Length: 117
Image (cartoon, rainbow, N blue to C red; front, side):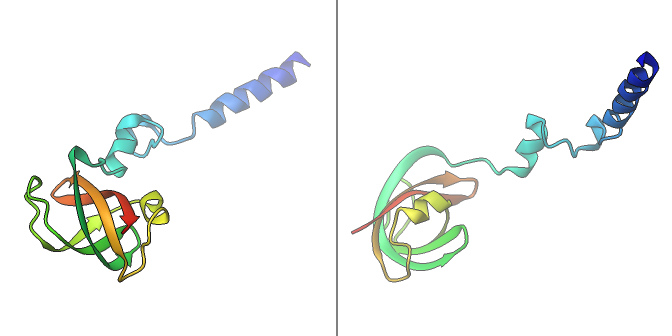
């Protein structure tokens, strides 16, 4: 009986070692590996403006908007990165008038809040 238990334990150890190695860059359980595939979130101050939804395409919203002088964003049309919870809590259909808050995201902008006007 001890011999069978030893074989089962040995087989489990061998199979556990058959996964991807830590050095192959595919270990998505490590924080470093996840950081490579998850883009950084928006940072810095939050700015506010108003505008009209021009288009919604997946995780992107295009707005025709008033400018926000503190941000350096001039009035016009801008494509903002966003998330499902922001769209779900807003009138996201084209033509809707909205108030929105946004932050810098890399070289672009990200919506962090959008509500109907």
